[in-house]
Length: 284
Image 1 (tube, helix red, strand yellow):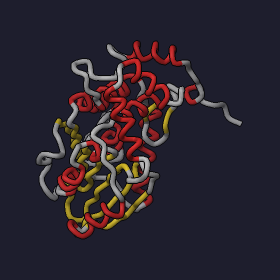
Image 2: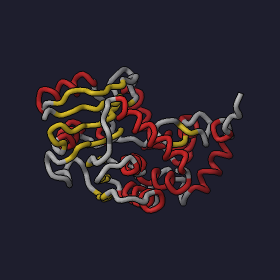
Image 3: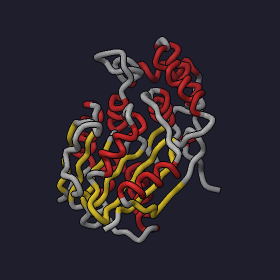
Image 4: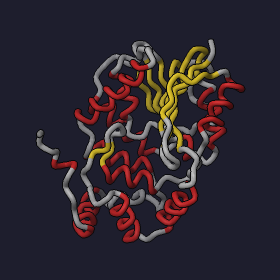
């Protein structure tokens, strides 16, 4: 029997958890340093500087390659628009898998900084990789019908206008191109999840830390497979995630097929409150 990874098994007390938070950044990365709002990007920036490494990247690259191999699509030479780039890990993975161009966009300035840090510290290659700040609720920064792959993992349901965000996203997919998306699934957990997110938003810093500790299951250093986030960053990302919408995959797929001519190539369902994942191809 192989040795267990100590980073996956180490349990800590709440007091030790708080001490660790105080050492991670100026304010324990519960909120941005310049205001009282939660920032996905501030969370991501801490992650890429302190937790991301080649093992994490290799896992993400292999998972992404395996997914596209399963639908017989090569990423070599593809153009990619990564909406809500966060840490830049997915953009990096597309670049490492031979995509010819990547446009990484995020509305959060700290996410852009995180992606730029990832680009500068983990990427050497010829891919034309641009990092832009912007909202998918506005006109996309790429031309209509121009991208082989439009990718948005766990982002569009946080925009405050999910359907408009989906509409703008698919407008960039070229004929025959792909829309790779992950969205929170509708279900009975939505009211409780929404309530918890609002309670986190309104909580004091001490209460926020307690909620983070409870959400992380007391395991600060556990690595969550597939997403490349440790338990702490994952808990903060989930609790801070407002706005928060959910979708029924059948409704999304039907709308995209009837209005825009997309067919589902890959679908992985999820329980209510978790992300379902799909890759859809636009008609040629």
